[in-house]
Image (cartoon, rainbow, N blue to C red; front, side, top):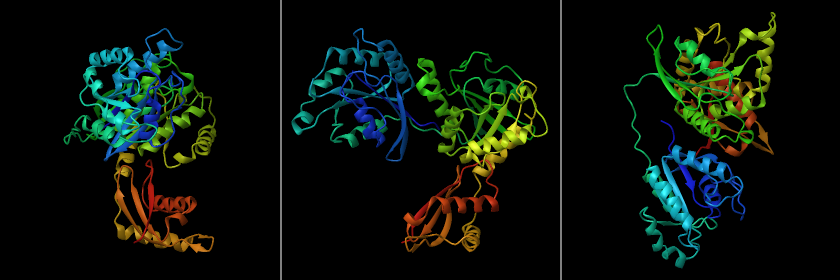
Length: 436
């Protein structure tokens, strides 16, 4: 199930970005004591009490004719539309303003769950003197201090209490996969070609697909699939249209719901820098990944073209070395018949479990091949390896000191697992823990 979405809204200079950074536990949003600094929505993922959610920071809503205000209002409107829960932030020092009341009217019409947070309640007197904010009509106000961090636990408790109840469809045995990539690489054309029908609009204008679309189909073996077509992900700094920003969020939500992701590249244009960022969303989410090079029919080829293209991709996408590559054409349907079987294989590898006894045989052989490193006179010792999760396969290795478990040796052990077991198409996570 996709993560719930939380949007922070309010007028300028009430501390939205400070609260955002506190919840995100890092300095993502720019914090400056100047109204209107945050013009776009900023996204991050966070977790509270085992509840994972997406968080959106928005620009401050003003009702005067200010520069960029139309764009900011568009961004805020979309964030409100996308959110499951809205944090309405006000300022304890200034009390209720006309702008606060106008924003409250906007939120009433949105019919969304709203948590009212009173920021800049830095001392006990201010935390108690919040009764006036009941007049906004959103229930109990939650006093917080973004600068001091007080009240954040109460605010997060109130937020997660409003999350929609997760309903898992136990009868749905379909493999869920999505198509991601830059706009105009042919994702919608691939959807239509795989389904054999015009399921989504195909256009030469970049960014036609604005929403995520679920489509079920069954292959010849009887395996059911749920295909999630997504809007193209564009480079954030270059796109200002509200619909494009919305498309990025929808694509991230689709990735969260997917077992396998088809990362689509334009074979004619080749790999671009933005492609690497797009694939990074799926890699970090732990999805199975298949690299699909589309429009291969438009490429001038000789006997070495495919091998050279593959070598270049492997060199520039080293973190996706585990992902199989397939060269297709949505127009001619070249090799499209291979995709369902590849998706099934990657999905099976995502769910592969290995017994601890077998894993430790691999571990012993790996250490015999390449002894553990010695760091400043201290040698890493590995004692035991066990699998703790699937989707993606996740392993815990117990060691004498996790600080000695260097990235290079971690990569070596992961490669040993890949050589022994079929984990093609799926990332592997390896966690070092100190043996007690």
